[in-house]
Length: 79
Image 1 (tube, one colour):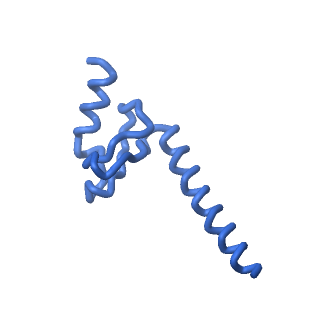
Image 2 (cartoon, helix red, strand yellow):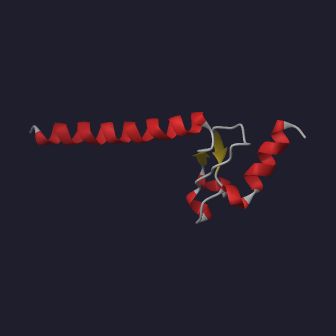
């Protein structure tokens, strides 16, 4: 079995997805991809939290959002 087939098999396994499925939280250590289509692909992409790179992306996105919120609050508070 190729890695691409393993990735596809893992993606189709509902036990790798959190509930509700539309939320799109994915965790699979066997899937080599950091970014995967959501369970319902029309809803976009999600991060594979089973991979270190996926977890790093998640932390970076959260840190960026918090930094932007802090900066926006700082700008509006100083006026």
